Image 1 (cartoon, rainbow, N blue to C red):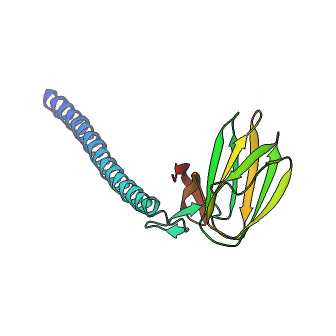
Image 2 (tube, rainbow, N blue to C red; image 1 turned 180 degrees about the horizontal axis):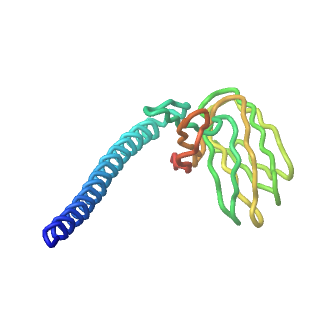
Length: 185
């Protein structure tokens, strides 16, 4: 009788030991698998980051599809909305000829505008349309408090800041991965 009790005790300890070893093995293998997946995600993220940086350095602001179902989407190149602080100045460059530009104040006070060639300057209270037949820069200066304005044009133009977002398609849904503004000049 003593012999069977000892065999049962050894059997229980061996089951308990094999259970502990299998739990340790499963835990270790899941950690290794998680590390491998994280490293591949980091690698994909680094690759995506370099692709975005390459597009931004070329300053060719066209919506582009990246690898891994990702897209980089820029704001419209012929519309721009921004906020100016007190006495802050904004510059917008119009590289094309024969432009019609609309400046609209969306919120708050008048804005002072002038051109790089000093051809004209004026104060805009609500909105104005300007027709220009040469390449030039438009300078806007806030006269009072915070100001929200909008510039729209027939053709593309270059602003000091450009907004973009990186989206990723997951299933049938576009998810914003990141969004920010960049400085152009």
